[in-house]
Amino acid sequence: MAVVDLTELPAILPARAPLVGLDLGEKTIGVAVSDTARVVASPLSLIRRTKFTANAQALFGLMETRAAGGLVIGLPVNMDGTEGRRCQSARAFARNLLRLRDLPIAFWDERLSSAAVNRMLIQEADASRARRSELVDKAAAVWILQGALDRLRA
Image 1 (cartoon, rainbow, N blue to C red):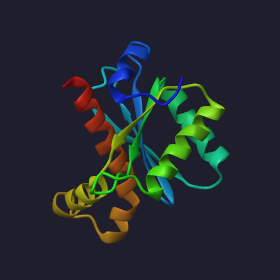
Image 2 (image 1 turned 180 degrees about the horizontal axis):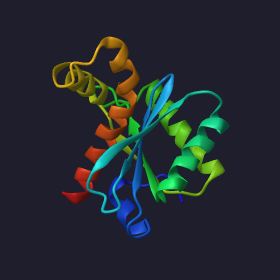
Image 3 (image 1 turned 45 degrees about the horizontal axis):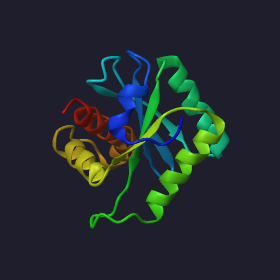
C-alpha cells in the first residue's frame, strides 16, 4: 500500500476494519480507533516517543489487537495552508512505517486540533494543566480521526 487520499481509504480497506488515528506529538503519539462501522472515534492509547522502531512496533501491536485496516495521521498544516517542518516530520513518519509494514495511510489536516482539545478540556472537563498535557495528544488523535470519519461519511 501507500499514502492515499482519504477518500480512497474505504475502497481499499477490508470490510468492517476499524481505522486508527494518530496525533504525532513531540514526546508522545496519541492513538485513537474507530468502531468497525467507522462512525465513532475513541481514545485508545498514548505511546511515549522513544526510538522509531519501538514506537512502530507498539503501534502495530495496537492495530493488531483491534484488527485495524489503516491509519489516519494528523498533518499539522500551517494556518496559511503551507507545510512546514512538522508536516515533513509526519510524512517521514508515514514513509518509515511503510518500510516496515504494507498498510494504507491517509493524512488529515489537523489545524487547530490541539487548541480545540485544550479548550474543551478546560471548559467541559475542568482539567488541570498537568492533566491536560497527559490527555491532549490522545484527545487530539480522536479529534483527527473523527474529522476524517465525518468527511468519509459526507
